[in-house]
Length: 149
Image (tube, rainbow, N blue to C red):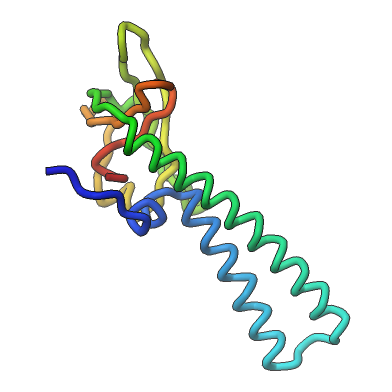
């Protein structure tokens, strides 16, 4: 039985969604620390608040777009079998899994940016078979089903 759509699972697995949430939190925590310790002059605090608010708005818009992408693939998607072509972890904190698949006679090559935790817990290797969920209306939009859904 298929699990229902889970926002937390998306945010914990998708590197970019995780980055959007983390960056927002880091800036607001820094603002709170500066404010409570009265570490900076009021003029700087005003600018920091503007910067933090701007980053938060951009991150929230980005996060809503990412969630919408995953939700539309979840709702309109069909499952296909694909094969991992590339699996890399980066020192900067993210990892990337690229896969190849075929849908209605056409071949596609796509990938997902994952958090380290998800990447290493799934032990991806080149050549492994994975089940993908793809958008049937736009087959270029694909995600690894076991990770996100």
